[in-house]
Length: 132
Image 1 (tube, one colour):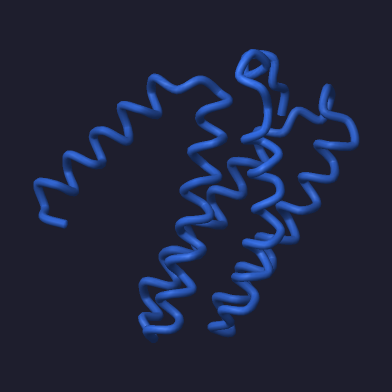
Image 2 (image 1 turned 180 degrees about the vertical axis):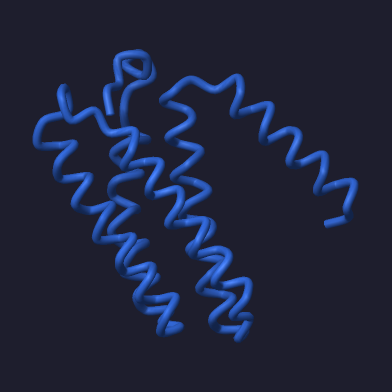
C-alpha cells in the first residue's frame, strides 16, 4: 500500500468510527482485533518479531477497550463472563508474545470468534438497545 493509500485508508477508518453507533464500534473493534491476531500469527511464522509484538500489543489494547465497555450493572452474568474471557484472552496473548507461540493465538481466536458471532447476530432493530 502506498503512503497516500494508507493515509486515505486511515482517514476513512477514522471517519467511519466517528459516525458509527456503539454497536458498530464494537463490531469494528472485533474485526480489528481478530485481524491483528491473525496477522500476528503470520508475523510469528515469518519470524518478524517486531511486527508480532506490535500487533499483539494492539490486540491487548483492544481487549481492554472491549472489557472497559462492559456494563456490569445491566449486563449481569453475561458481562462477568465476557470480562473473564477477555482477561483470559489478554493473558494468552501476552504469553503468545513472550513465547512466540502461534498456537496460543489460535486459541484466543477460537475464544473470540463465538463472541463476535453472537454480537453480529443481534438483530438490526435491537442495535440501539444493546447494553454491553
